[in-house]
Image (cartoon, rainbow, N blue to C red; front, side, top):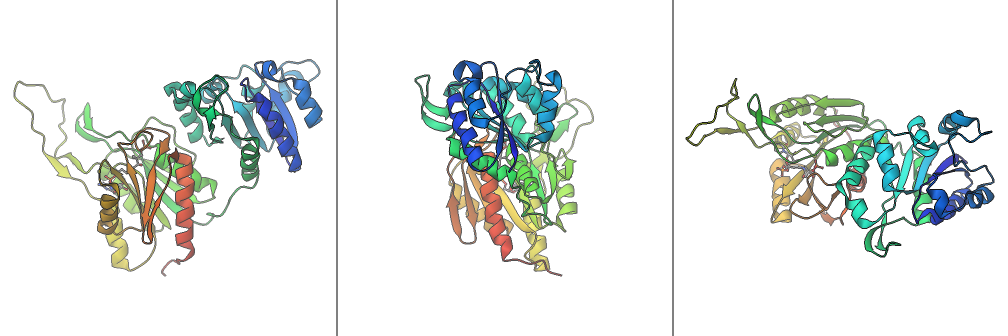
Length: 404
Ligand code: PMT
């Protein structure tokens, strides 16, 4: 049994939070409900008080509530902070460190795992500002229960409906029983783009944001693995991992990966590594001229292929090697060819021309190509792709042992 802080913010889904409270209680947990002032417009604090049998917190400075230190007390005693529904406003406050009421102060003060069940109008959910805030929170380790699709209270049809109370309760349960199944495993993950400099102010790069690799690193760390995250230049905040290595170029990434992979159990290359780099980096900014400019590009090392070749030369099965394939046509054919050519165990193929897949977005649509065929996945959050991928790797590792 644990004490769960249940935050409720001001959306129509607030009424379902009553069912979340009941569901948590049925599983034997104690629930401390925290309602924002807008939540109180949708559902009465008395309802939560009657169900939870505890005072409901609605005001940061309510007399008799230890006034301004109550959020610290709850912050240190709660095992999980779950917010259902989490509105765009609350998500924005959490992402930006704004603490102007009890719930947002509680979020900053607690070190307990945080689970958000977003709920809002489809356009609000898809807005770049909300997506950016969700991405920031995800990289800080906040977990989510995806909103459902269907008719929304505002009359629209689409994604944004609060997840079902049972799904939220199940997600809380999973957070309460942390998965340490990857403890003792060393994993190297690459993320983000590489930048190949032409001169001191220009580079050749690509659209990778680092989200996919960060989601994988976060999931591996959550499972207790010792994670080395090798990240190319990206403005996103990386997840907290044991070893974070920042690199810029394909050559830097090559050196960092090769130095750290020998002892790894798994190497997952989600980074979009440049295949070509300028043959020389000019010392000074190149001046424009009337004539066209010709830049000679040279091949960069194929890191994954080198890992595959090294492993084959050693004759071992580890590290288990996983690559991604970013394609815009003939997805499976090309992914299978890459898997064979680079001599890796799994290739995660994504058609980056599909909406909601590949670069920059929070979702991906992947097919995992392995020795025993392909496993197509639906469009889902990158955190979910990470979970599915690590589960697949887990099954493969179960049959392998390290060579002496
Ligand atoms: O970062 P996000 O915005 O979340 O976007 C995610 C993603 C689209 C970058 C990711 O899902 C993805 O597809 N990553 C691989 C992109 C890529 O470089 O694909 P590729 O088909 O060119 O390369 C195949 C594999 O070889 C990759 O694992 C790559 O890391 C590796 N490679 C490529 C070139 C090179 N010189 N060395 C390599 O090791």
